[in-house]
Image (cartoon, rainbow, N blue to C red; front, side):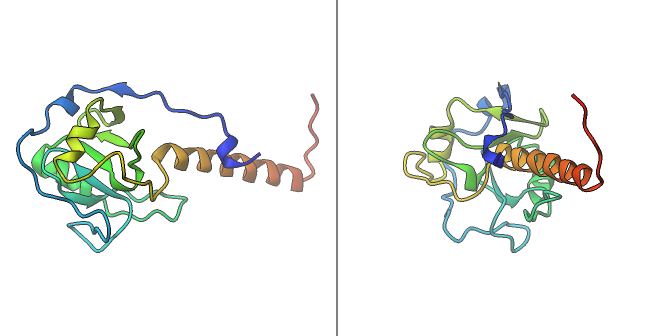
Amino acid sequence: MEAKDVPWQETLQSCIHTKQTSSGDAIKVQQSGARCNGCELESNLWICLTCGNLACGREQYGTNIKGNSHAVAHYKSTSHPVAVKLGSITPDSADVYCYQCDDMVLCSDLKPQLARFGINLDTTQKTEQTVGEMVSANIFAIISDGLSSLLESGTKFEL
């Protein structure tokens, strides 16, 4: 069984905070060569849907995903609640996180929201794992490691 075959799937809910982002003009975000505004990280970047600030996410322990939580710090200093993982954007979806709800959420009008920052949802290609893919891979690794340890220890299973 490969990690992609793990039948884990997150159920996302709509969030009112995705409707409360600014609708005015916004800065244009360069996706290619983008960096966190708080450090030098070029991956695990989250774009604030209110102002377009690019900041790194949390470090994902147990993976090689680095982060200094600058997106969290941005939320705490501005109260801008919703961010999108830049590398997860595809024509069909993207990782959207609401810091106020403290959860991944659905954003029904993501295309016009990202267009404000010069991001064309129809042509953007995913460059990083989504949060769901990371969770599935971690669950698979934990199960595989645990089963391997049990088998190596000589534990007998009875059905």
